[in-house]
Image (cartoon, rainbow, N blue to C red):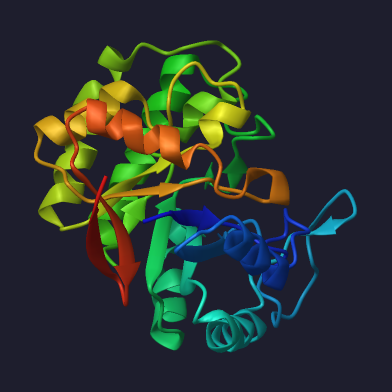
Amino acid sequence: MFADYHVHSAYSDDSDYPLEQVIRDAVAMGMDEICLTDHVDYGIKVDWDEDGEIPYYGSRPRMNVDYPRYMAQLHELQQRYGDRIRIKIGLEFGMQTHTIPRYRALMARYPLDFVILSIHQVGDQEFWTQDFQRGRTQQEYHERYYEELLAVMQEYKDYSVLGHLDSITRYDKQGVYPFRRVRPIVEQILRCVIEDGKGIEVNTSSHRYGLSDTTPSVEILKLYRELGGTILTIGSDSHAPAYLGTHITETRALLRELGFRQFCTFDCMQPVFHSL
């Protein structure tokens, strides 16, 4: 089973990769299943049909997925390519505690196969711009990141997996922060994931960003297994053709080395297990 479960198309405001071309490329590389997970980030982005001023970064409008067009095109592509690849419909929710009601309303409107719960910003301050880290010590921004993640997932349960669980490390210009210092709260997060019947993803973008560890780290993956976690997805987090489906084979081998025996795809928000 060759599947990529974290994929962005031009429906995400940080990608120019046409949706149908994503599917064609996946078919060409022999992929069995793909899940589109375009971005929704309430708090810093607006919906396509909202009134008011549109925020911009440079020349790019900061917009969430155009849901009606996204759903309609995915359904049409399922019909056209269904004999060659299974296409699943997902979204990546860049959640914050104060935006949870908007995601509940969105989930009530559209049926999905899969939802990635990610933390991309806290208090509407983004990590990649360093707005969140600025004015905080390394300890403060690491702890605050995990506190927000735990608070969100304790309140919001309508998701499938946690995306790039330790993603704050990717944007940490101060270097590697010792895992032992955040292990207690990470363990709380993982116990909550397991108790709720949810999972975590392994995000293979760590390779292209030149990180010194996997995302999440090997230590987090080991802890997840020790605690009894079994639901895992693997995704490239691709935004462009060069990254679609990359490093999935190596990731599966690593997971086997760590003692995992299965990974998951999803159907109608339910995990489907496959041998690694």
